Length: 414
Image 1 (cartoon, rainbow, N blue to C red):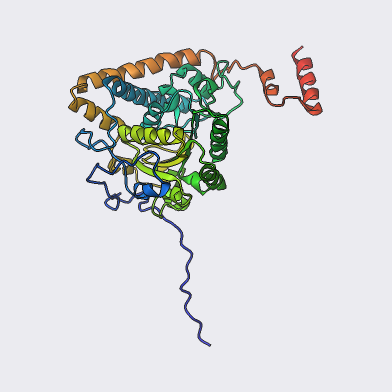
Image 2 (tube, one colour):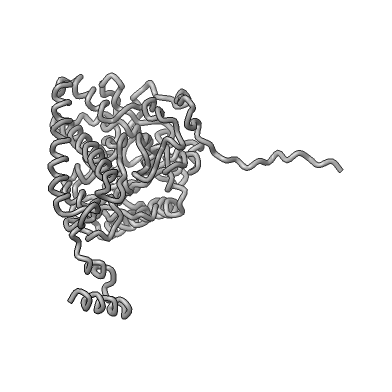
């Protein structure tokens, strides 16, 4: 009996380029038009299906801002956006170097993704609750959080608001509406939607902004969140930061070879937007649209921020092992800071000399703040954290075995 050929094959997604290859992004279409229609904020979810497949853009590469989505930010807002992005990048560079010197155990940079955090934060109200993942330090900088406290958290020293209990970069700033970051990916999705539902139940108009990477959309929590957000019209924004890589797994592993990550919201009846994540004006505009929709009772919006992670996943990662070293340099949507700089120069608000001066000033400010933070301790010496704090803020009522350990610890201290 002749066996029939097996035509069924298991498909294993592979990134288009590997180390040693010459990266070519010609398969990614950069829209020539910047005039994708801007729908009414209370339109039906299905009316945004084209926005899940297109790409909302405002900034041309020559610096022009065009199209219906142009938020027409003021000079003050543009200056703030640029400064905050530059401060975020300067802090990342300093903390990465300090980790390499053994001052802290771990760090994660957001290089190339600053527009997502800054543009998003500026379009929200200060009382809107953010449920972030671990690459949104720009939101805290935009909201005026203490950079020194952020650094102390990374150094796990006496100035760490969390007393060294959490992994560096897993910040927690309640006073700035920044929910505690969880190292367990995806948990913030359902928590954020639940917060939004509770807020609506109390007849309050604050909204929740939930942020996750494209890799975590493969988690069940993502689909639970979309289901509840759709069913109860939760006033929230569900953001998918598609930076092309989930550690060393390229976005196709999370089904990125489909139409788009934004399109997953379409299947749940949600409004969906796909935005150029390296265009801070487009990010601002899309966020403002989604926030207005949520506050007016239109429910949740899924936004895919199409961007690129220019450097490693973390200080524990070597991206040269799984992608070409020059891949970040040929990313077709450019660098978010350079694109905003070009726009401001075109408007006559900025120039190369002022940019160089601000870049130097940001580095100096970050360096001085870091000196103050490190003076409170680091891993290369004494962290100055009271060891007894390991027993605090863990249980409301400590169990018997923990009480025994506390008594033993106190006896040793005496």
